[in-house]
Image (cartoon, rainbow, N blue to C red; front, side, top):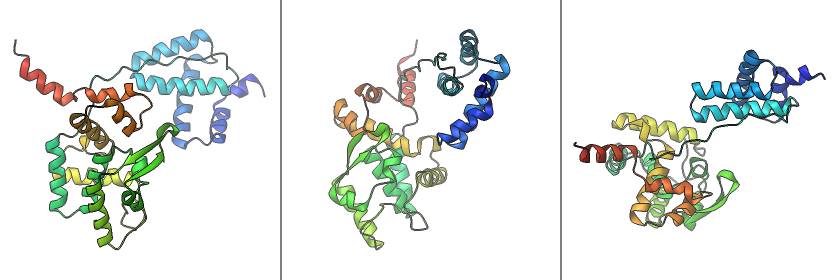
Length: 274
């Protein structure tokens, strides 16, 4: 193969498919490389620097890093491994965004009880009382609740133990037993199969809209944030919280010591009167 063949989009797409990347990811990567090739042709160090500047001027840091990652993958595949394009350092957030307040959390639970939606009622409570990622949550089994904990390999292939509150576990087990279930997945869909992360997200959004609560604060990961904030209010051990959340570093967990953006806004308006 010639050098031009290695640089071609068809070859790049074929190699990405061999790596079993998702079609959506492949399409995104190819689009970025196509843009670079249209603007600059073959890669050189100067052209990559110019393209990086172009990206920084037009896109958010996270998007810039996605684009540079795609381009670096192409450089490696197209036999230009000596070349690379640097990403940008992501700004550290000074607040946690989209976290339900206690009032919103309780109002949502009350609404779910009022309409008799016990499945979503327990979904929300278990999310908010474990801090589990949704990918972990959908793997919970009734046997785990009976035991009081479950050991899992989660994000970053890290091992951690997730604990279940005793009283909540007792309630959920009783609810499941009343439906004729004593084992298997904790939450099922309407087909009787373990519910998916997409299914949970869709259900919560649907119920939030009807409860008159912003959908921006009613999604699975929002309740992980809620768990972290509530835990630190009750027990200010950020190292323990880091372990409970399965973070690789305590520095990641420290953001929960900060106020949410809404809390910052309220405090700002209260005290800034000059």
